[in-house]
Image 1 (cartoon, rainbow, N blue to C red):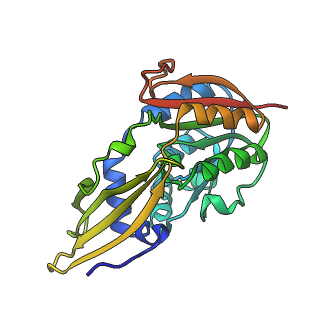
Image 2 (cartoon, one colour):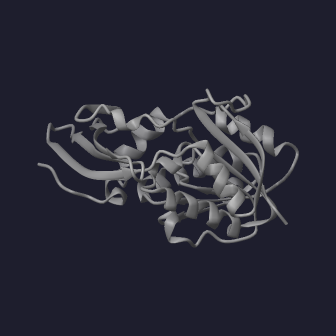
Length: 265
């Protein structure tokens, strides 16, 4: 049976959090952040879209004080479990907020704000993405830094393919349940550059019971040019733009656009 759920509901499943954690295990962006931070610190850091703590946990281990904002309770719970395994000293450095980043409540006075791992691609419009940059300005202390990491959209999504399901991740959880997360493009609105997709979450319990949920999402593929405009508009100085997580300078051929910017005093 298929149900229509909000994005908040479909992300809030322990097996999604577990499989996501298994599939999203790269660390090159964490190493890039460490190089950019250098000897500064300990810093007060905010990570938006903090997920299961892939970035947040190692930075807390480095001694920084971190607040994470994550919409799905199951994702935040998994991050909390990782922190607990590292001991009370590190747990005390971290605050996890379960809420939609677009609802605000980010706090103020941060030294560094992280919007990483293609997080802008979870947002439905350029206006929502620009609003995040505006809220980042308000949350950072004067001279604080902003890290934004996304694919650099080149303007080719209108060609499809549409109507073809793509598996994002799948596998068995620790309890033996099977899950498969997939997406299927429906259409692309050229006027607002918005992709409409059908997202599906299929599970099979250890006793063989199968269950399906789905919802239709909207996302705006963001370009490096758009992010540059928003940073200028909201009072940031762009210090570096990288084309990959190894720190290679960005070029027109780069598949990613990673910004390191400073809030002007």
